[in-house]
Length: 218
Image (cartoon, rainbow, N blue to C red):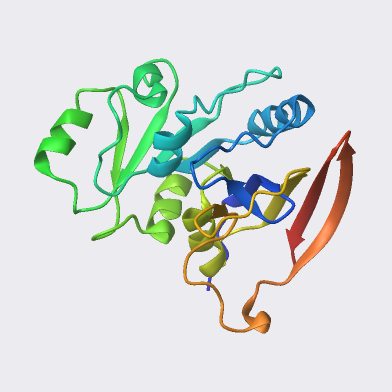
């Protein structure tokens, strides 16, 4: 497999037991210091990617606010093009470059609705967004670095397809539990430990009561 030129970083704040949100969707795990660190990281990448579920749950802006620097291009994976018209992403896409990645399953009605906004709509994949195809299209647009702040399902897709270069995890001092709480990696999972990607701990940084672990793929 030809190595992608696009450098992909998976990023998340997790509880001690590996959750990125409670079963009700509460995901406020970061501290002020960690938010500043994250926003500095955002300012250094070309693009930032999340899924529609993250938009529905958190209604994020995905901009650089707690640090100086440019806003990255925002990318939302939304197979059926059902993103809320009231979301901050849609409301601000006139001012911040935004890409909506959809599949061929999108209805004509949803597609026409999205076309009313100054969005770059990328169609890739039959019933769901094809990650490999999307990354190729992003590369063709000159994007060389991508920060993935998605949920467990999106993280699994990038890990399963071996399409990442770094993982930056903030361990927050919380215990969440819950079978239905969202984990950092969801999806089908690997059957054997040996199937896991080979990653190396590059650095550990303490931010008061939080720990930032930086892993690189080897």
